[in-house]
Image 1 (cartoon, helix red, strand yellow):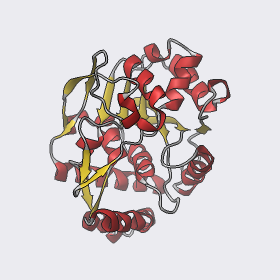
Image 2: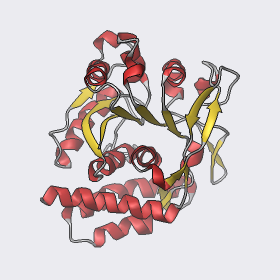
Image 3: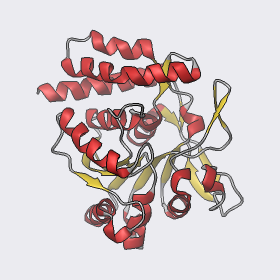
Length: 289
């Protein structure tokens, strides 16, 4: 069982904001392969003053207030409680700690500033972010957000991390989760799954209005699955060459020094979606035990 910390910009439940961070948290808690030590919060989907309290409330709503939540800081490593926690856990679980990083990477950057050996202690990191080519959905180009929103931090973290998996925006387009399949979860008599489907409706509605398709992309869940269920993916080792300039648009291919990372490729979309649903059901079952 992997010892995991999720570093996220969770806005599940915030009107108009993405909910995939929350779905990734539920997914991780539903697996039998993760011991979720804690959650560190950062900015991205919204500001920290929204993300942090929202995540505390979210964990209470899903019945897991026992998982500690720490607030990051946008600028000051010495004032960053999330970064301090990351350093503490990396030292305590040296060689065992894994990180799921699905927002801006500021907390990891600050952790390295507090302890220059931080990345030496971390076993592996699964990121959601970055692009290797323009990100196009239904003819519309999207801006990359997770790395670009703090490009300096992203450059340093990506070039200093030891073992990295990156779920790029491009790769995540392989995993469209249809509204029809999501709504089927509510056919269960389980109150949590019914609540989950109800809470997710606004995101499907927004995607329909913006892109015209009947589904959502499980950006952050893709990254979580790549970390915890690598057998669902083909390993895709690649040399990325980021620079401080290329990170301003989240582009992994610049003209910098090469860094070997895994950009996992999904094997079977249908099997992946069913796997996600199984993990949601597993989490729901854990609440009733």
